[in-house]
Amino acid sequence: MNYKIVKEHYQLDKKEIDSIAAIIITPNNDSIIRDISCFMPHHGILIFKNGKCSYFDICFGCRHFITSKDIKLSDELDDKTWNALESFFRNRKLNYELTENDLETKDNN
Image (cartoon, rainbow, N blue to C red; front, side, top):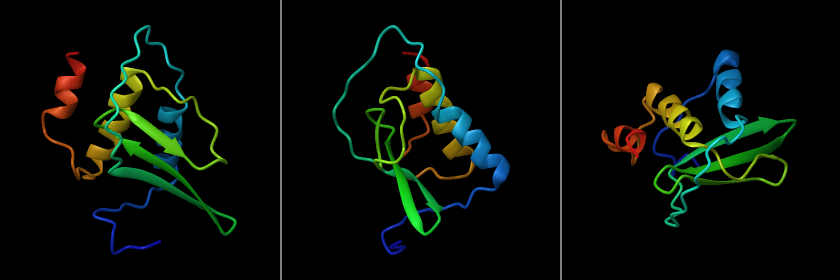
């Protein structure tokens, strides 16, 4: 990994891994899906296992993500899941490119 380009990083313990896994596999229950296409991911999850690296690149601005081919997830998360995911990052002080109002504004939409 090229740590020169990484602004913030945090290594998860087992309990945190279980927590974020539960968040990102939550089924989408929203009836309205918003589509904004900025896709400038400033957050990500890297998974190192058996000498391989998998990734989950996240853009909280437009609420889209991409993953490595070995990660199979629904391509759309509901608002509750996006809020939980953003809170997960914020609670670990991983706030790069997240403004104070982002989560509050999205909760009110």
